[in-house]
Length: 244
Length: 200
Image 1 (cartoon, rainbow over the protein chains, first blue to last red):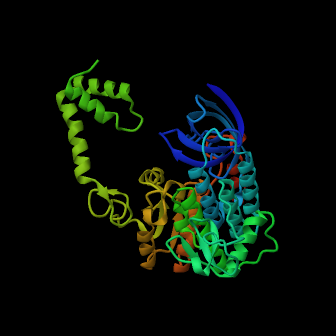
Image 2: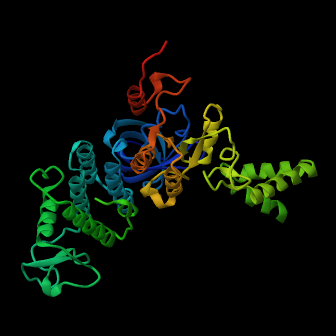
Image 3: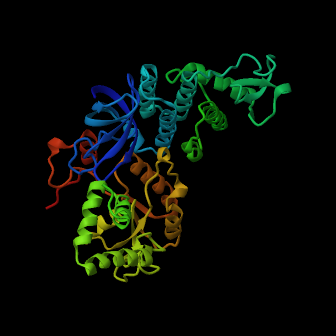
């Protein structure tokens, strides 16, 4: 049994028994971890407030094997995005990102880059007047982190150049008018494709110059959700609740 | 060691109860074996009767033995005031002090897409139906002070406000009998936000 002291992001919290909660954590060194937090449901527990989704915490936990269930000994809040408690839309956006992380990250993996990316996103989400753009940028970064970089250079089917008629989800690429169609094809105007390219390359801190309409945000969101669901083989419940 | 088939069946059923492990189940089974026959059968009959008669109130979702629960059918209650809670157990907690004289609405949980709980899975549509009836003046949202509970409160407020209903949220802060010293950061912040002037 090893004792681990690490920073972590609380991905998910569920009730396990009368006084115990089951906490899912994203850690930079140990990947996604699940641990039992005993006694935290009691009103006098000091850890109750720390173990809330979206909080960045410092935890001490015992772990028998790297992919098993740990036991949480101590937790302290490092930061918590307060805007998520007062803005439903931001909570929903953060839920979408955390659902992807919960479904698609593994235990015992090095997640330093991903951890830093999500911490930066939560800081941004807490303050930015454009939470949707920041969320779409981080979803694009998550897709790329998993090895699926959207290709905007040439048609993903025939290799031809512009003009492009839309995006093929299965090819993770733009496609020309001749190759358009099929169940994985999404018809998108050139302006939306350019905006998606900018969003995917800018990162969450490079969105100042980007101006997108509500329709474009909606189209890019649908495309990103389709890409994440197809390539990571997950179903995103939050996407059904989201209308950007 | 294997016990008799009847004992094993009882233990297997008791193990399904929350917080009951194999050892506790075995202890309970032997207790029932040693207890007076009538006491043991009374327990079996009580479980059977509860399962046959208890259902959920058609109006608020509380437990009831008729179409409406005791609270909804009580004429001394104020129907213009509705307190929205996540679970029946929360309703029980609100009833304990006996000071609230309004009605309730049990949602059946709180929004949590990561656990697959979307608005359609909660009793939100029946709540809106009650608010649309025009007899409700105020709705008190008493979901838990968790991130998901807060989001549920915000979601409900967004739906209820256009109906001309006053939407309020229960107060949050330091629990009675505890110490400020041991409160976490969010609780202290909430307590400061919810401060009020001392009267008298």
